[in-house]
Length: 88
Image 1 (tube, one colour):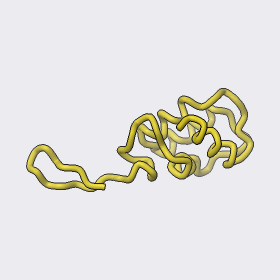
Image 2 (spheres, one colour):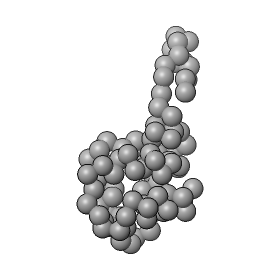
Image 3 (cartoon, one colour):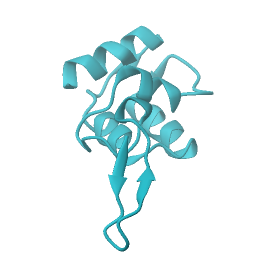
Image 4 (cartoon, helix red, strand yellow):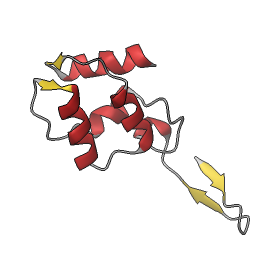
């Protein structure tokens, strides 16, 4: 994806929203969220997922989705992906 740089008209590249980039700040794909869960020990609580994403420098769209997760235990990566789907 390319966006115009307003200062001089040049184009600069950005990440696809599916990669956890500048997409809609309210949405992130399950794959994007999964990318920022690297190193998480499951089962985990919502707060643990958010902390791991912060440690992995997750972008705003991923953090926004995680902040909307239900307060419960996530036992598997599939549980996390289902929760992302529920939010979107």
